[in-house]
Each structure stands twice: as structure tokens, then as C-alpha cells.
Amino acid sequence: MSLALYRKYRPQTFREVSGQTHIKTTLQNELEMDRVSHAYLFSGPRGTGKTTMARLLAKSVNCLSRKKGESEPCSKCEACAEITDGRSLDVIEIDAASHTGVDNVRENIIQSSKFTPTQRKYKVFIIDEVHMLSISAFNALLKTLEEPPKHAMFILATTELHKVPETILSRCQRFIFRIVAYEEIIKRLDYIIAKEEKKVDAEVVEIIARRSGGYVRDAESLLGQALSLGDKKITLDLAKLVIPFSDFQLVLEFIAMLQQKNTVGAVTFINNILGEGVDLTRFIIEAIEGLRKILLLTLGASLDAYAMNVRKEDELKLLGLSKSFSTDEIISIIETLLEYKEKIPLSPIEQLPIEIAILEICGQNSAKGARSKNNFLSDKAETFKKYDPKTHPLAQEDLSRQGGENNKGSKRSPTMEAVTQHWNQILEQIKKYNHTLFSFIRLNKPKSVKNNVIELVVNYSFHKERVEEMKNKLAIENILQEILGEKMKIECILIERKEDESGVLKEDKEIEAIAQEFGGSVIE
Image 1 (tube, one colour):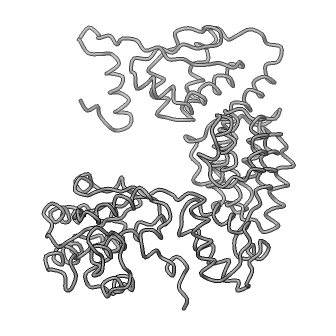
Image 2 (cartoon, one colour; image 1 turned 90 degrees about the vertical axis):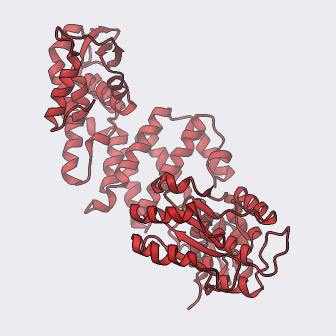
Image 3 (cartoon, helix red, strand yellow; image 1 turned 120 degrees about the horizontal axis):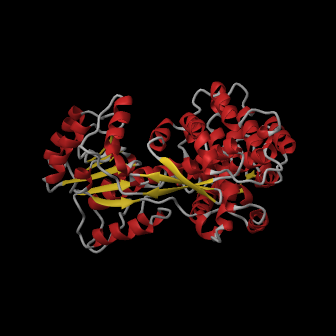
């Protein structure tokens, strides 16, 4: 059985590691000065070199030929060969995902660390996915990290740093691994291609590097799929047989249709590419990435700095599209595509969620005689079981168009009397959107209406913060427009709270009532 490329060409020296210069430099300096730590914590995304760096560190500290003032392992001595082949008795690798319990930690780590190395200078414990350990296991490990034997070194690796207890973090030297730059991945792929004595079109290498997203292991796995075709030269057409490609030109074409509100064209386009075998989920991810790049351009950001893998000709096209969008429009489209992308696996018809997303983006679900936006979205919850209306940002542009059609010829702005008259109706719609938000707002009253701005009096700063969250404020203002027939804004005015005759804050009583409604109580 042939080895996967990422295993076959796993770096055996620090200079072979792609990227992570900040980590390599620090570790090499420590090795050269013979000041290595007893515990390290490597964190970062998958496939960025954490385990590779851990093995290199273990190899360097135990290398028989490494001289004073040097950092690179020789990769030739018996100790290096044992670690490279995975047969060293003094380098113990543990997968915490399958050894989560305290008993495993005691047996495999704590007890074992008490014994001196069989042959080498250090006994090295590499614990992968360490965040998977139980609390009891972490507590057991903590004592050993506090008072480690002189011959023991611990290297912990995790993709979820936030799940590692602070008590463990404080006893480790921490290194954060980053995704690798596009150019570094290109160099790495070219190196492997040369070693394999194959020829691969530069365009194929570029696409693989882009598709990897900065993860070296993903890039090497994709290259392995392409090289498995066996031909001496891997062309773009040949690579498409094993790698799910989607042409960025198609992405640009789709985004242009959304910008033009071309509903029929966009729906037809999605069905056509699906019929041609394009991975729909992958395509939508790339469309979202394209929109992100346009968003960066509208903000004046450099794609070179924040968005890898953009060819100059594509950047010019993106720049042209960016001039046709407002920032709010791009954000709205991205949020809609993100939401409906998650529904693809749940749908009996693969393209249906994206078709609905297109209708929503292009504003076709607010035609005359159609149901209101809220009802439309509520009904969609029947189709998609995991749909959560609380997370759905209402499309302001659609409701604006709908409100305008329903109130043509009306020039009078809603008065305070009209707002008060419809306030209960407004609260009911807010309750359907978000019950918690409704509970906050019902404690507060509108004070005045000036220039289509409703001033809402609130007694607590956290009420004000919750109401003024972007998605909540947008939803409330859309509900106001739908009920009052005019585009309205809402602003919160924070006022000082007052005590009642008994010396108790009136608002605290109301908060207590809400807590009881939810089956809880107020904690001082």
C-alpha cells in the first residue's frame, strides 16, 4: 500500500516545514541555547503542522549527532530513524480523542513519565487533540506538569484552544499555528511534484493551493488525488476527473446575476451547473468567498493582504462588481447564502434551498398579494427542520419595496398616536421573531416620534444593547415598516431608574415577573 503524500513527504527538518516561521525560529533558538521547556502547547487549525513540529522537536532533543549550538536533527542517527519510523520507545504519541479518561492519563502518561528513558535523553509525550480529555484527566495531568521529571517533555496539540483549562495553559509554552500562505503552499506542491517526477499544469497547482484554504495537509491530499491518475502530465481537464473543480468565472457570473436581481437567470444557472456535475455546496462556498472579496474591496482593503489566491484578471472583475454593490447589500446576500447553504443536506431536492435563497435575494417573495415576509419565513421552517427564525436577518430592501407598494400616495409620517395604537400589534410581531427580545421591549415604552424615528425609553443598558444589535434593530425596523406603512427607525434612550414607595425599583419587579414566566428567578 502506497503512503499518502502528506505522510510520505512529512518534513524531517525545521527548514522543510512550510510557513510557521515564528514558531520554527523560537524553537530553534531554544535548541541552540539548550533551553528547551518541559511543556509546550501547539494550537491552530488542522493540517498546519502541529504534529509534524512536535515530532521534529522530539527528534532534535534526542538526536545523537546534533552538536551544541545546532538545532536541526541529523535524520540519520539511530534515534532519529526510530522517531521517523514511529518505533521509538521514548516518544509516546497519544490520541486524547480516544483516551479521554483519567485512568488512561494515569497509566499512559503519569506512571510512564516516572521512568527514565530507555535509551535517549528525553521521554517525550505528544498528546494530540488534548482538549478532548475529561476534567478529571486534566486534573491528573496538571500535577505532572507542575512538577515534571527532568527527563520528561510534554507536547500538547489542539485545534480548540478555548477548551483547554487555564491551569494547563499557564504551565505550557504556547505556540499558535497559522494557515499557510498561498505562495508557500505552491512551493510545497512544486517540491513534491518534482520528487514524484511528474508534470502538473501550473493552473492545476494554483487551483489546488486555492482550494486548500491554507491547510498544507489538505493541499497535499488533493495533489495526491490528481497524481493518482497515473499520467506523466496532469492537465486541468484530467485533474477535474478526481477533484471537484468549479470555475471562478462561473462564480463571477452567478454574483452578477444576483446583483442584477435576475431571478430566472440565477435559478436556471444553478440547475444547469448542478446538471453538469458541479458540487453545489462547494460552489456556494466559493460564491460566498467571492462576495467576501467584493466586500473587502468596497472597504478599500487589499486582496493581497486579506484574500489569498486571487488572480489579477479576476481581481479586476471583482473590482468592477464591487462598484455595483453597497456594503449592506453584500452583507445581506452573504448572510442569506450562509443560512441556506446549511439547509442543502436537509432538503429532498438539493438545489431547492439555493433557489429559495435566490428568490429572497432578488426580492421575488414580496410580490403583490404574496404573504408577508415573516409568514413566508415561518412557513419555510416547516420544510427545513433546523430553521431558526431567530437567526434570520430580515431583508430590509424587500420590505421597503413592499411597504412602498402598500402605501403609495401616502405622504404623512406615522404619529405618536398611530404608534401607540399599533404598539401591541408591533410587540406581537417582535415576539414571533424573538421571544427574549419581546420580553425586553415590552418593559419599555415609546416616548415620541420625530422624523420617522421612534424614541424608546429603556431603563437598563443591557436592554439598550440588545435592541440595538444590528440584526435585532433591522428586524424591529422592518416590522415597524410593515405595520405602520412607513420606513421607521428606532432609537433607545437610557433613563435613570426610579424606586417605588416601598424603596424597591419598579423595573426589578417586572424583571422578576419575566424570570418567573421562564421558570427562573433573579439572582442578586
